[in-house]
Length: 419
Image 1 (cartoon, one colour):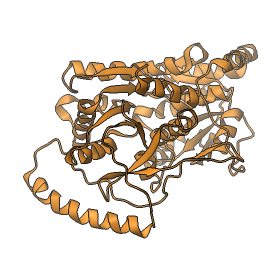
Image 2: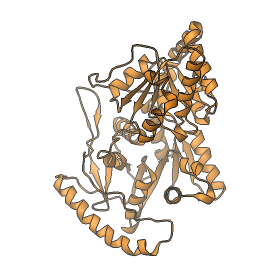
Image 3: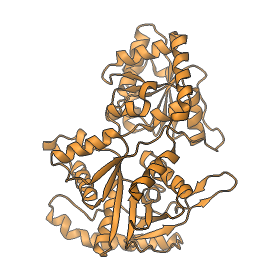
Image 4: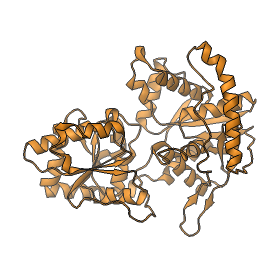
């Protein structure tokens, strides 16, 4: 095993986007912070599309707060969207791509210099690269290392295979074909693979067996967390005074926000208690248009949007909620369900297989195609005080065995140590 280099490119890229702390970025950053605490030999780096090299960064521990500052450069608008690896034939694209890359490289270097970055490049020869971001960022770095003739070991963490479920084999889009190609490239370069759940592991194995993905090296499951860190920010968001259910980062389609609206309509139509409904996260245009449909006029007074809450407000929302609802048809893990449990709040989850890994016997489950079942759980939590108290008591009793980011980092360390 060579010296470990932990890849924080995902967080570097995300610092210029709308969602600088979304799910995958959060995983990458949280693991990095804990590895910094437990393994002083690990080095940390970001990949620069301006130079086709890794540059070292040096996290620091804030003695006042006890938190790790990863020292990731913020807001440097390096273009990372133009691919180097394509998985379909297109003669015109392939002809123009080298010139486009040359131009973008000049722009990227200008922006890098304009930001005043003074990082040292990191020789990756003989190193072990651990990457926990998205495959497309891994591919760009691996391709650059290969073109430079570097010798290295590679251990990626894979989060999910959603596009392979969402697009039929005969009707795959450029996005899904690129997703397949990127994951295949990552797998072919990997000495070992980390999967974030047993579901994701079995999914990867299934797509490999059918030939969509290449043959696999060893896959080790490192489950994610239930831990929800406390925020340090002052409150900025108001919380409903009335009982409410909460969703976090939920949208239409695979995330299945529709079923929550339908359950609320059923409750209202039957004269049952209707909780307020808080949607926390970035409100997509599709969701906004869906909420404005005339059929939801009856429940609109119960709907609340909390856009992009910071961590302290998110924790307040969890703790004050009647329940968290995670209605997804498919998840790689399901962070909000675990975070709600960490905050002592019931998690009402769909029967998506991985959510049983997240919540176990602490979760309340419903068929994601049956709003009736979700409505029944909400009604029981409201009307049956003994049931609601028992659920919360069981969550409280289970608190010592919930997983933390430190647990995840220690498991990742065991993977790259081969122990």
